[in-house]
Length: 92
Image (cartoon, rainbow, N blue to C red):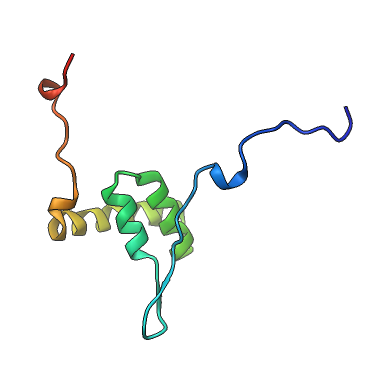
């Protein structure tokens, strides 16, 4: 049929990325708070996408920045990360 389209979820529901920029009191714009939140929530792919968008960089550079940021957050905000589940801790 001409003009028919396959219905699907609205674009706003597909891989939503939270607002990346925050205007600070001195006029600077930063995306790190949103990116940090994604990292500690374990939403790593979205965090890397957000880094690429905020930094306008290659995927490899975004992965490198992501790894550096994870290390920083684990040192400065260790309580924000959930403890990893060990195989012996899982109910079967």
